[in-house]
Image (cartoon, rainbow, N blue to C red):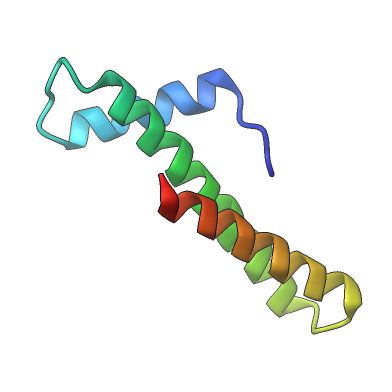
Length: 76
């Protein structure tokens, strides 16, 4: 799983807040949504890379890893 910097999470959470209903009491919800968004973006990038380079064993592992990231994203 990718580790995201606090700055990256904070920026994503800000844009979620800015584009949402701007409730002041949903900071943790926005923070968690930002982490999920970053995970989904990372998983999509891994899948795209796997598609670009075929289906050898290493890329199959990337697909499995991306699927795992997406699964974790949808649970939160």
